[in-house]
Length: 150
Image (cartoon, rainbow, N blue to C red):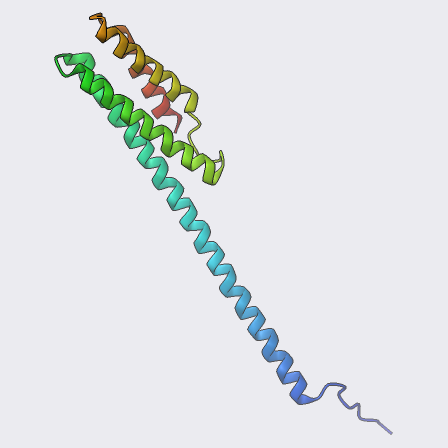
């Protein structure tokens, strides 16, 4: 004599449980996909900001190179342009570090500060009518060093 075992859960309850489990798995897949997409966007944003800061550093370097070769009557304007590019690069790097932390960023604030000191020294020497060749050489070296960090 065999006894038939009756299920302890009704068919309706079992079907409802299967549907709920399926919906939870589906929701987890959707949430996982959204998190992966968000992480990718964060990385793209970080890379874009770093790229822009490097463009600013390259622009400052190119102005310094032109100054070292040519000099001329627009020297004070060009030195101001170098300061603008360095300041923009500094702000962009600061934004990246504040938002995303120090990982994957250029940590060059000390070098940029030093480059800005050389820019100030160039401006002072120009107002006194002195040569800025040595300062331009040092400035170019620092900017090249910052560009090589990345």
